[in-house]
Image 1: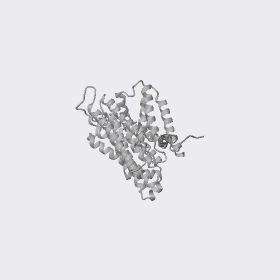
Image 2: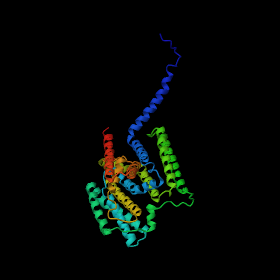
Image 3: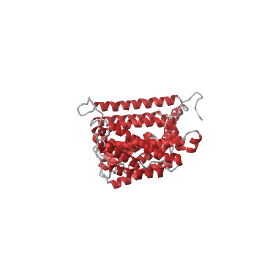
Image 4: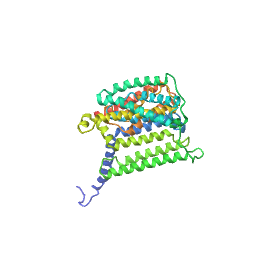
Length: 409
């Protein structure tokens, strides 16, 4: 016989708190499940970095190696920003490596042989990259020739043109001012003994600005009742990002400071992240890749949009060619060989969909760093280039398989 009194709520009250906690846990689990690719990508990058840090006996995070890691992957990241938009729009560009090599050759001839001012020569090269992108985009956008075929032809054409411009030999060195694009560092009038104060302050300021900006964005979305990630997960993610930026800034500041090319990269990343997430143009590119017919019927000029994505890709390929040439301090006929594979792999590993309409700037950047850390770490470990190619190919295949699996679900 029950002795429970009507006013006794002791048997009912305990159910309230556990239910709330369970609902919160379920909400977090559901959010992680729905955003598995994004969080999986971040976790993968951290795991890969920790793995190679251990396997290389701490060499990976040495200031000199971190600097080399940035310099070695800067041109890949720059091209990945353009390739992401091309892939999101539902196309592909196989010519980016050859275009960057050709632009490097053109820059060398202008600066070294014709003694053109490095600023003027760089602007002419960027314009040439835009013209190349327009020439290829014209056939894709207005004549519906598959981008695979057009850019495959472009890859052969500009590889041959680079050989013709250089006449089969290397040309260099470049003017010292031009070399600073890729080998220079931020000046530091307050440099202390063994520590670049200006670079450290800039890095810490970037971490603080990122934290505050993301925090305000999360609060605004919550205020307007928009979909938002759970607050605990959000704080963990943004704190981890900010901490990584601060740590890397300190490590770089303890060597020679922040490289000039890193500033160029950051400005481009911020710009393209803003364009893709906050502008009408960015939303239209995603609509184009998601369903071209529906986008056209909704009033979007899909032909012009495709044309613009290829012009943008040409300009960024030219920028990457200038960065690479400045780093080598010479233009060689083989420059740019294989770049397109690393660029495309970075986008797909970073979450871009092969069918278009899906992809994030941050994902492409993380994908590029995953490839870069793997290349760097395997080289330090003494793994041959043959097995490096095998491993990178398997990683790319796994990323695409994961994308297909997620779509089937």
